[in-house]
Image 1 (spheres, rainbow, N blue to C red):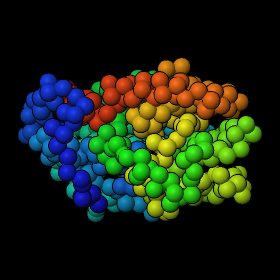
Image 2: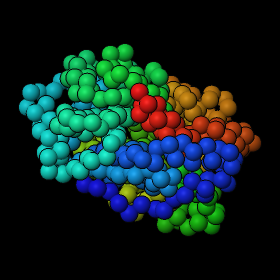
Image 3: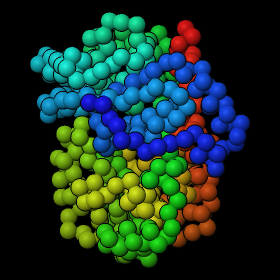
Image 4: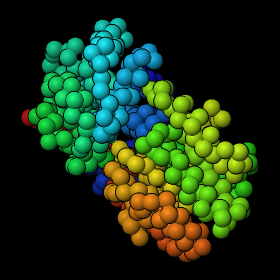
Length: 411
């Protein structure tokens, strides 16, 4: 399925953040690629960081003259149950795949290749494990890149062996961090490139405080009382239970404290509803715990408002690919208290842009400290914003992408 309906973007619009020289350098790189075309392929156009990046990256690539297409594979519930198992196993969970599950995985990709997708560009970027087997159904001149958004450093070996065989036809792979690259990754070239946020997207644009207050009022959130926030899928790896535990400790000192657990329910995550229900049960009848999803009208603008209203942002993930919700919060000048997992370690500089913690008790103490010291919150917030500007915006991301594509095409 081809995705369309993008917001119009121009690279020149980002001169408000970056120098003329930076923008011109990106245009020059784009000029070198103008005779090439590229297709991104992933498993959903709704929910999760990959879809969000592509909604911003595709039109920006087009704006500098690169023909860029976004395709989404189709699959039934059985397919996405298998791919969720693969995702968890690649992050270290000891989950085995049956021969029948492997067959479902491969066959769904074959049907997509034959019936659904039109991959006629000269570069194809395949995102994450769901569409990975597509490569075996195209024996042609295209350059194939696997863009891995998860931590492959300690995968469950039987599943990794199966997946690595599917990677053998790829020309390159791209990872968020160097330590995510499995030493047995079979692609001839391996690159490191962190993901990004778009400062001009509805989720990250500046908002008037009156807009923020209006959105908070719609959901019954009190801006005059402390607000703790975690934006993440309802998933055991994201550990919303730990965020609730931190909130309950803080609430003993500040009874009016509120906790917002915010997410978009992704179409490629069949476990999401199950874990949502478990989280709701764990939260109980506490009227100051808000479970907020796209099914309650929470979109990009609402997430923006919640992040800007937050007193402290939590990210209690036990495993993390990169953690773009952390990036978003830092961009909005909010200190983040998080476990040092995955890409969070690149973003939360302990004592500078937030605090790195391991336990609920540590997170509670740091949260309480920040609630009580507004000047520290403001200082950390300013440092976090600068850190994102230097490293994790779509402008930096686009420049990195172009350099990788040029390097690969020159091989």
